[in-house]
Amino acid sequence: MATPSTNRVLVPKPARTSFNKERPLERNTLLKNQVDHFRELEKRLLAELQTGIQYETVKTEGQAAEYIKKMTTILHPQAFRSGGK
Amino acid sequence: MPAGLDNLKHIVVLMMENRSFDHMLGALKSVDPRINGLIGNETNLDTTNEPAKVLPQAEFQSQLDPDPDHAFPAVNKQLYFGTPGPPAPPSMNGFVQSYYDQQKDVQHSHKIMYYFTPDKLPVLTTLARSFALFNGWFAAIPGPTICNRAFAHYGTSFGKVTMDMFEIKPPYVSIYERLLAANPARSTKLYYYDTSSSTMEVVNLLKNQPQIFATYDQFLSDCKNGDLPEYSFVEPNYSDHEGDGGGEELASDQHPDHDVQAGEIFIGTIYNAIHENPDLWKSTALLVVYDEHGGIYDHVPPPGCTPDAPFIAPLTDTQTGATFAFDRLGVRVPAILISPWIAKATVVPGPEDPVNGRVFEHSSIPATVTQHYIGAYDARSPREKAAQTFLDLLGDTMRPDTDCPVFDFGN
Image 1 (cartoon, helix red, strand yellow):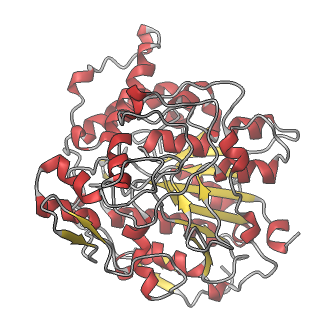
Image 2 (tube, rainbow over the protein chains, first blue to last red):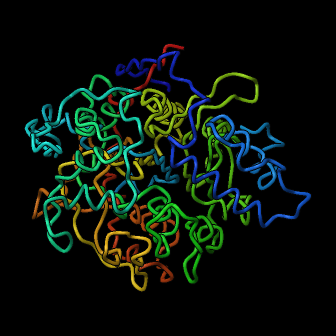
Image 3 (tube, rainbow over the protein chains, first blue to last red):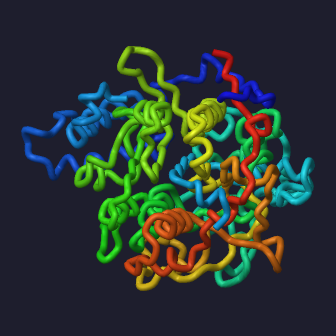
């Protein structure tokens, strides 16, 4: 901004130990349901478009993210072309 | 028309996850008595009939594990414990009992009553004290995420009170599709964090309308370049995962047991991105709101509302022994409207003020966006048609930049 704000608020960072991609999926009902929703959509896709990921192997947050990334890339290829993020 | 509304070109909604008003902002009552937060003597009885009091001991992570139950029957217990149930008034006395059900640990069940002190949440509390804080913004229904977020996108959950995918039923369409079909067409985007986090509740939209989606990096770029659409909805990162470059992407949704501080940074970064572009700052209203309370204590009984006819949730979905006509709201959540055209420290009264109090819920989002960008629009749910809109909070005076916060993440 042209005029500097005098109301600067310092925001602390999370602890370095916060990250846990091994957190069991069963402990996050929201993420588990997101996986379920993508799984429902995947069943309606042509076989050649499906991820090939077995549902039973998605057991952690990190694994859920990998599965969701593959499904999102299939459904939203524009994001994949722009780098995914 | 107030100058703030005359200048308004962009509405941005950021919807976070699973925290109640009192848990995040209840402590602010001690600094501003207009804020309907905690006195400090609120209690729930635990399973030994001892009172469990609200305490300022909330932690950023590892405290609400397991994820507190917030499915429809659990919320029913949280609201109505000790009463015959609806239509009796909610007692707000069942939060501890409900959390006990998950681990059978009396001391652990007390943690559902813990709240944050303002110094622990510098972003959320600063925004609440700098702009407009709603005393009466409630989840759309007393249930979980998916059906509540549906109200933000469609103004209805199409009869769902569960986490199941919902079936879109005519004549209702999403706010994004309404805007694209308007005459003249309006610009809109739904920004999800990245492909590994993706969108939460509208995977059908992702499949059928991929052009309305973009990523968080695109949101930041659009803010910087002045390319933000007229209406944006932003989703946080829902999981801890590896980034495309191999780094760690920490979940920023604040859903238990994700780190609340990561969400603070996410909220602050979105605010800064808008604030740093002077043209965008003076022409944007940013709403920060939570989808539902996540099973965490709040002291304000949710009020009744216009039924969402013709939808009735069946016994098989409610699991409470009674059907649900979508005629009462869910638990109160934090909600803050941000714009330089809002007077500092505005508190929008809620049900505590029988004369001037106003009740908002997630249908207020499509109702407000439709009103501002489209005008008259009949194909909306009864809930959305009855919902309060919030752009009247923008006034005639634009506050100087020195009067607005900037968040410093120490980068």
